[in-house]
Structures are given as structure tokens and as C-alpha cells.
Length: 323
Image 1 (cartoon, rainbow, N blue to C red):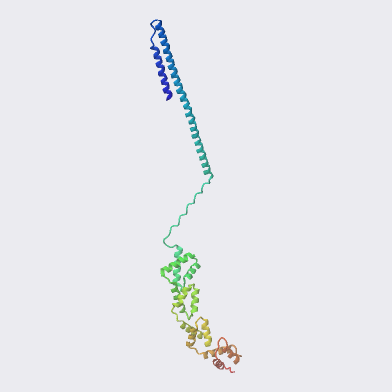
Image 2 (cartoon, one colour):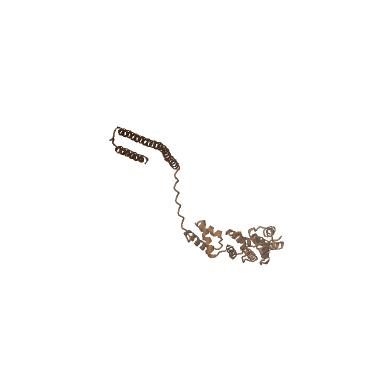
């Protein structure tokens, strides 16, 4: 823009100069006038030349100032351009470093998709239902089943332990089963098959896998009269073999009855011990026909019968042996 203004300014100056040359008066007078005209023309030409020189100096000065200022600007611009040119290099380096880092890192393996969870079912599985039905049949068909005994039975018949537990647990819910009451019920039921003692009932409940607490409850809450059981046991023994009273008491003790129950049965059970001794003597002579009085007497008074002297002598005499 400055150059354009200077160019216009120079064109104007040149036009002015050309106009002044054309308008200068021609010499018409004498020599003095010619001299004046010459001198005035010379002076005007000098003035014009001085004006031209001054304008030329000004334009040159302005051009030199412009040119001096422009290199500075241009010199500063390359610096800026160098800075800007260096920035892309830096950014390209950073990008290349980042891309190299990204490329050096291993790509993560895709995570496996989670398996869909099985939809919960409202009802039991076929195996659970089958285990429940089998437990229900066992509960009604077989007496004396404990919780553990029923589970063991189902497992032995091919059901898994989990399905067996599910079946028995739902059986309990269905019938509101109390296993302690079941143990007490079975104790009463077991006593209907014949005379039983306390130890005999407890051992049977243990064999059926009832818990200790359930067995203790059954032993305290059954309807069994233990002395009556001892009495019935004594009758059974006397009906089956010839025994003395002492041997009868020994057998009742071995059956698990308490001392009180044994004494009760021995005292109140009707028995003809004289007849029991004679029966034993007859059996002995039948097996040993050459036996003497001493042999038979020793057999009756010894272990395990322990007949007293009176009963033993009477039995020997009854079979024809005398001392």
C-alpha cells in the first residue's frame, strides 16, 4: 500500500513539473529582460531540480525505510514460520511415538460372553419329584423309618443325595413329621411283636439311625410297661426250657432288663421249680444212662442252673438215683 501511495505521489509531482515548464513566459523584451528571463528560467529550473531532488531523496528515504522495515518483518516471519514448521514436526513425532506405543501394546483379547443363567423353575425337577414319591411310599409302607434311614434308602435305590434330601424334606413338610415322635411310635410298635427290654428297644432305634435326642425322647415317652415286658419274657423262657429261678433271672438280665424288672418277673411269674428240676434230671439221664447220683446232683446244682440242695436231691430220687 505504501508503494502505491509513493507511486501516485511521484506521478503527481512529475505532472506538476511538466505544467510549470509549459506555463513559463517567453522572452519578448530586450537583453535585460532576456537576462532576467534567463536568470528566472535558470532559477525556476534550479528550483524544479531541487524539488525533484528533494522528492527523490524523500522517496528513496521512504523506500529505504520501508525496505529496512520489511526485512525485519520478513526476518521475523521466517522465525515464526520456522517455529510453526517445527511444531508439525514435534506433533508428528509425538503422534509417531504414540502410534508406536499403541502398536507395541498387545491388543486385549475379547472377553468371552457370559453364559446365560438357567431360568429358575417354580416346580421340582423330575428327579426330585420321583424321590419325593418314593419317600412317600416308604413312609406309608415300611414302619420305623428315621430321617437318615429314608435318605440312605433313596440313595441306595439310585437317587442322588441332593434329590433324596429334597424328597424327604418335602415329605416332612407334607405330613408335618416329627422324628422324635416317630421314634416313640416305633418303640411301641416294636413291643407288640414280643417282650422287649429297654436296651433291646434302644439298640433297635440306633440301628434305624434315629438320633440320640430322638431315642432319648422315645425311651421316655413310650407307653411300654417294662415290668410287664420282663414278666412276659420270663413266661416265654419257662415255656421253652427247664430252668431254675436263678438261671431265669440270669437270662432276664442278659435280655437287658433292670434288676427291679428281673426281681419282679422272677417273683410273680408262676413256675414250679421242682418240676423244672425233675425235667432237667430226666433229660440228663436220657443223654447219659450210666450217670451216677453224684453226676446228676452236680449237674443240677452247678452252673448255670444252681438248683438248691432240696430240689436237686428230689430230682435225683425222682429219676431213681440215690446217694
